[in-house]
Image (tube, rainbow, N blue to C red):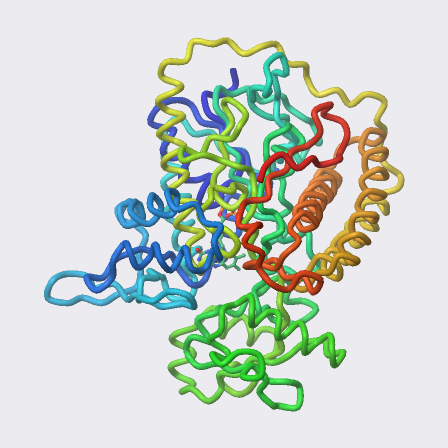
Length: 539
Ligand SMILES: Cc1cc2nc3c(=O)[nH]c(=O)nc-3n(C[C@H](O)[C@H](O)[C@H](O)COP(=O)(O)OP(=O)(O)OC[C@H]3O[C@@H](n4cnc5c(N)ncnc54)[C@H](O)[C@@H]3O)c2cc1C
């Protein structure tokens, strides 16, 4: 046994699991880049939680259900919202410093408000909340006894005992990126905390690590995956060739920023009476339409009418970052495009974060808990990750305490006849192709025909990748390519099933919601474990 607990990923979910499980046994945390590198680290807006006396759990619950367009699981929403404040207090106890000011009764937190929230309930640390949370969690995990951290290690596939149905998970094969060795890593409980899948799309706000590895691994292992058609596109990422993935927070529009065409004219009021304050899926669709109809490469976001000193103080990160690319937020509009931002679907889990595979948990963005339904309410994702990482860890710690099972003998990684690749171009070519056709055919606006085209493309590429995969020595690029292809397949399959428009899934062939479709789209890989044809297994 390499550890009692194997944690894959070091965002808010993975670090929380590692910290909590360290009290009950040995923890091995593997993360494919440096420890802080994650979407969590780049979260700007903040974390939603009922905090002020004017706010209520009922109000946060109703806001979440409203955003989810009929697909949220009410029991899950109740749990996340009601446990939220306690989990946020845990962060504060760890040393996370949320913004506020001294008042006679102590520290009065500054609560932000974002689209879809009817109350001020977003705790934040300026516009770099994720950075502050990951700083405190990383320090705590590094100081915790019994936690071994392996940076630059990428989990490739789960270790499965297939003598039971469903298979039992006993850890993962892990690639050491420095040596290219693949280690069989055995653990009593495995936590998939590998984050989202924004890199499946050409434009994304996500960092490079977001290649949907957790979802792909679980899908290959036969675990049900759900609601992958619900990809949230953030309306405003900075458009600049070098500004890969830089997001301009929604709070800018909350504070009065407006969207303009290249000729300076505003356009949002033609799409929604709330104009720039419409929900982000409406804003993203409007920008996408303006760009496609006129052939523009971007539109523009403008907050330059506000006081320059206030802009610099309220949005220091965004201001500084824009400046490095030659755009001064205080002086004029900056070019923006929509970008894939958040994956509402993922590995199906229950209220304890358990997947359908014994000994396998999934937490954070790679899980589908039932909280978000068809659309995520802003700032609910950090909260969800925190609450479920805590619940899953508590469950796993209790289970491990009474666990006497010995792991089955699992074969070491077998490179077979694989040789060094002399055709790395296969990886870059397929990588670019998938991301581009996913953007064009399975993006913000979909149609039956575009989805069929995407389905044909992904089938061909999957076959090519499969052949290549087993003939060359494994690299992290190849593992990631295989994962974005698997996730693309899941998104296309789910999108083809849902013949209506709901929440984040919009198709011109079925533009309205259909009450008969008020249910999750659950898919699972074929039972032979080889075929990549997804079967629809649930309603
Ligand atoms: C720019 C941006 C701003 C956001 N702002 C907000 C916000 O204000 N509020 C909010 O609630 N949400 C926000 N979100 C969403 C939120 O940040 C994420 O949903 C959340 O942080 C996900 O946490 P996580 O722990 O599940 O995954 P992540 O934080 O993405 O962590 C995943 C980890 O897994 C590792 N990993 C991935 N694959 C492997 C593998 N195969 N092997 C080993 N390690 C692996 C990664 O390196 C990383 O460490 C934002 C997202 C982005 C991108």
